[in-house]
Length: 285
Image (tube, rainbow, N blue to C red; front, side, top):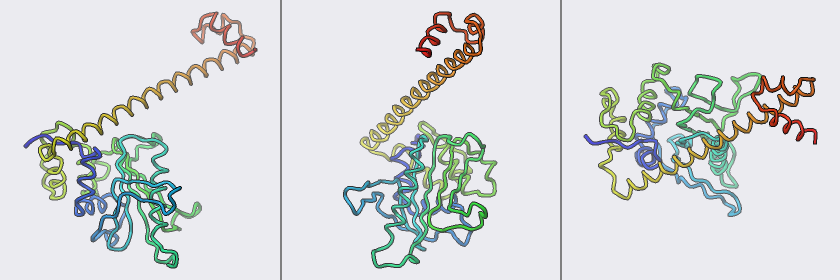
């Protein structure tokens, strides 16, 4: 068996979940917060591009968009790194799909829920070890009162550990699939391959199935991700340094205002006399 390509790549993710409805159905039933009587029985794909009625408004393209046998719509996005715009984009795309269900003369009772599923290969909530985040519109004083319409699930893939989700076997298998199948991996554990849906998804990731042009597109995607990651890292480091500088300047000024001598300020700031005098002079100026 040859090597595998990473299913989180745009090319492979859309191939697996955007062209194989049985795999997408299994994926959604495993990861969405549904009771058994809410499971998807069948689904059909919808255009991934949502073109606005008014050309002046913003259009959008999602990774995968589909509708199930009940008329519920699902928007699935794979995101390699987190930024604050991602959650807004999820809300924007789901809201657009929700609004566009009705023609001008149709009644609101025909509206069906729209669900957004975001798989993020990054950590965005450092306040908790939870990796699975479910959002919906609830009464702030009574969370049992829900306004149906839009729901979102965000999954922080790096935080996922199989032991935290043992009661949901298929969810564990799908998330393990996304984490364990990577570039240059040649072997996988038998318990992944025993499941027919996971095995089919794994087979779709075999590098030998792709044409040279597709492999070039696959590599280009990673080049873009690496470039963006490097830019974000530089921006974070520069931001941290700027923050440190501002905090240090504030310490110098506060010490000086409180009557400390330059020599005393030097002790806790590790700055030279010239640097301290420059900060004080610039602030007084």
